[in-house]
Image (cartoon, rainbow, N blue to C red; front, side, top):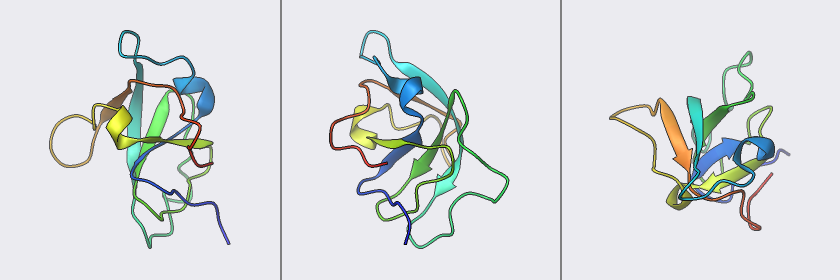
Length: 98
């Protein structure tokens, strides 16, 4: 058994998104992707301060992450391919997993 995400979004540390809003978004560096059915991030990767991991529904919550911000509450990442960064427009929702 493991903690998993109930939504597509970004696995984050609560302290990094607390108080985020449209006016003052939390800007985090995306360190990787966690797909459903995967083993998670590489063994040496931990979601640290100022970081997030893009996560899909059913994927295991990576080490260091405490909650998932739904993708709809973010800018969805930047650029094409793996996201390099994201902006959370709301703090961790009551329905967040983690």
